[in-house]
Length: 181
Image 1: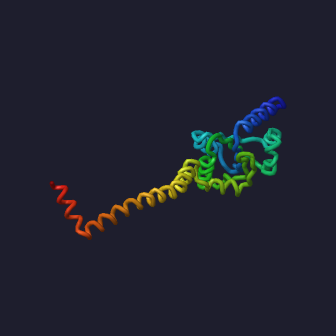
Image 2: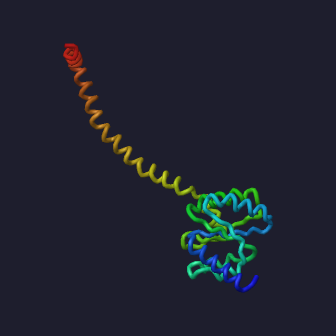
Image 3: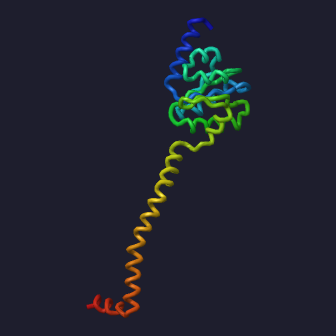
């Protein structure tokens, strides 16, 4: 690769690193070109792109805040740049890795923080953002629902008590006689 081509690749990688808040580094050793293509195809609709990169070029492209990714740039590296919800992408990558043992998480950069391979795999277990928001809404709404039920119970119990008292004193027949007239 010529020096001008390398500079172009570094510039492209630097732009991708600037545009994306999530970068996942994987070891793809043992995967065929067809399998990497399959991974790309599965991740593209989720807003992710997979690039097989040379470690030295990616290292040059790293910004100051991404320096902590350098220890993971050993051996063959495929960088996955994610736009949007990264948990969905990680779940899809984990599903792919279950059928292709060769794909292994090396590390990642998630919203200004570096993670090692085990931590990236653990992030894949987190539910997607929509599901987390739904869980949060249900947790927040449960006490409100209980409060509404309690507040409704006071007048309901009062009315039921008054009706039972009126019926006990014989007022229930008078009320039904007045209703018929």
